Image (cartoon, rainbow, N blue to C red):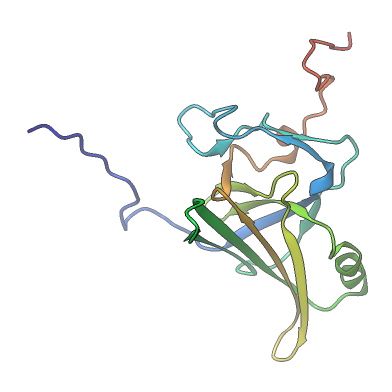
Length: 190
């Protein structure tokens, strides 16, 4: 009998840092297209969005939430649909931003009703993306003044696939200022 053995995962000797290192949010209505890993595959990296697979409107505002080390976590759970429609994935990102600040509270209140595309980087250097046109992530907040003084921002969403990996977290690579017409008719400016 022949078998093909496959090994997945890390051994305990390899480094593995926890927590989310950085988190950026983009209004989902400014996202023109996300080419799935099936539409634009990254060689050797399944389930990964290419650095060229994210198209947004020019002039879009990308907001980075700044938090201390260990101040942001990500959790994703899967659940089989009881009606047999497949599996859904629920994502939760929680960031604790230190100190109640008027500008932060104003931004959160102004943008709470919006839907979002989230791009984050874990402390191992892996980038991720969640949210898609027509199905952005929701923003929730709570403020606490107790043993610590902080604003907790929670970003939640549900999808029919897990959060995708992203080829890079670098904004200059993801949102390159190139002279290219997205209608794909080879209309380059000379």
